[in-house]
Amino acid sequence: MTIIEMLEQSTILTVLGMTVVFVFLWIMIICVNLVSKAIRKLGLDKDVQQPPSPAAQTGTPPQVTAAISAAVNEYRKNEKNQ
Image (spheres, one colour):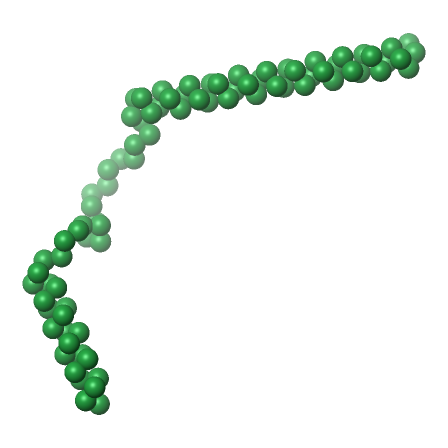
């Protein structure tokens, strides 16, 4: 086998190997996209709902707001007098 024949064979094997890898990656990307669409369509991408924590609740009762405001005002008055 001459150098030319060996170079031809190595070129063919390189192109064939790159083609196989490219096709495999292309098929894998298509499969991942299909699975992603199926998961979204079935609604499996949603998190299980956790019970709301007190920090996540919106709307503080007005009595609590009034109590906090009064405490802050009293603290500020005491700080100015000292």
